Length: 410
Image (cartoon, rainbow, N blue to C red; front, side, top):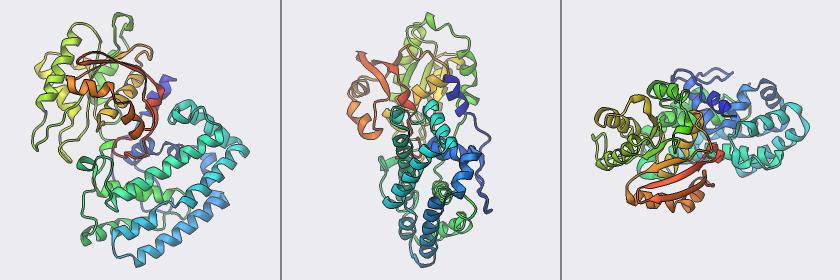
């Protein structure tokens, strides 16, 4: 099963243009975003018999036609982006009706039944894996539409995301220049519904909204077993895991609060604590976790800067330091580190060690409510604070559950 996870991370070179042809295709970079944010649609696109079934389905085409009429009208009448975004939103009725049809297919079509079985095996929606197949597909679909609507609400309408200081829209929503930019980008995809699956047009426009805002954080540095992680990934194949108490030491990032600064002194302090544990032989790897976070749209990636500091200043081999360059919050520091531990074939029963300053360490111990509020689940099997600066955790496959409310790190 672990090898399945590795294969899911394999992606192509990153490019950004979108085709305007009727038979809409996606670039490699867009496919990464779809895979990470909308895995159900990623599989729809890749499984030809299911995709063909969706193309011909009367109920889905009825929904697509209704949405097309609404968007065409809005495109000619709207005077601002908020109006366009409202027309783009999946309505509760559309979400419900499409969900009902997906459930019907799950019980009546063999290829669709096989697709649901595959989704359960691949653990991209592990929180739903024990549900009946019809419930599973409905919940996965609801996550997809919630994620697309979230992009419209935040990156077109300008509503505040979970963390507005770092994740918010790049424009003033009322700016006429923004309206013109959105209209220009909508023009080549306004009729993309024709000859495509019913979900294609809303998906394409959501990807365009992220691109307009320069929000490609989720697609950077992929695949995570290459480039700056190539040496650690190769090393992970040769490890005698029985020789270590922990599989990895996780260091959550601490972003500098001022522009132009690459690494914060707190980040350096956390790195020093982790390196001391590493040099005692407690684990074969250090995972440094943190993306382009503070301040807003910083060019510096916390994980990359921490690895530079550990390798360049603290005399640790490059092959021992794994970057996790996407996490934007403490909760996803832990979740994303677990995903990497699976990707690197670390033993799932061997605990990981989180090392941080005393304040964050205590906060991590008490993060259960925050995990439920932000992710909807606890991403580990257990977590125990063993010292003022250390927490020990056991991996859980729930860490693979996608977060529709965070397209920058789903």
